[in-house]
Length: 53
Image (cartoon, rainbow, N blue to C red; front, side, top):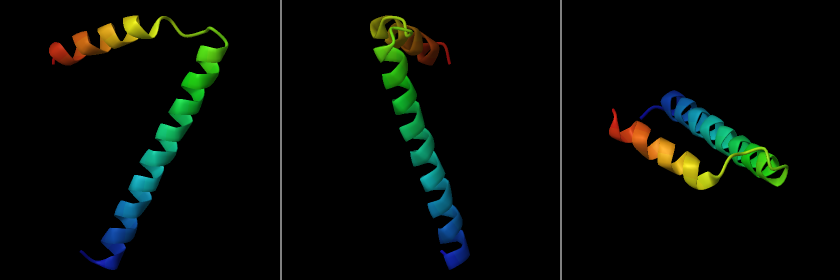
């Protein structure tokens, strides 16, 4: 793997980690404000979406 390819890959990984951290923060904030529905309901819907693929 060339150094340019490695830098691109590291950049993409960093971007993905940043997005994950932002998503976790948003979920915590929304949960603390009572703005998210029951997490069990969300999990159930996500599992149903995975099965339908």
